[in-house]
Image (cartoon, rainbow, N blue to C red; front, side, top):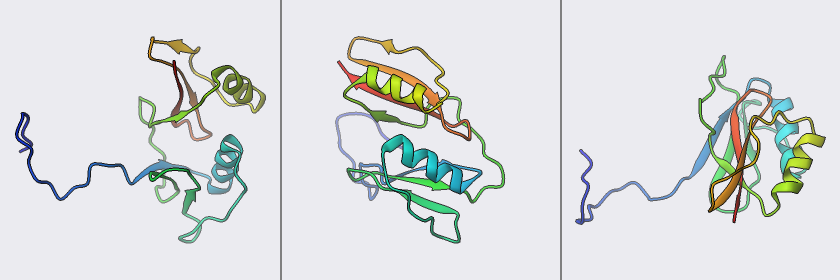
Length: 129
């Protein structure tokens, strides 16, 4: 049982996210889409074409995973990509035919919008105010 409160407990689980997995149905299409979205060169998938490590900055990795026969989508965005220029991001997404699901919302501390990848996975882009 996890405990709440002032006392810190020892856990062997590190307090960081190692990787985020995104289920995809068509690996070549997903590699191309995510590479274009992030301005990255195309590279090859591993594990007989079922896993692709998207080159990212920072410690957390992004992994495209084509090991499931059927992609099941979350009802909420899986994570967010940061941006320093929301208007340029909106323009870029529109120019690249990305399905944007929401107008830019400004909640004071951040602005964000939700969009879909080719497998209808919900993603978010966020800018701090």
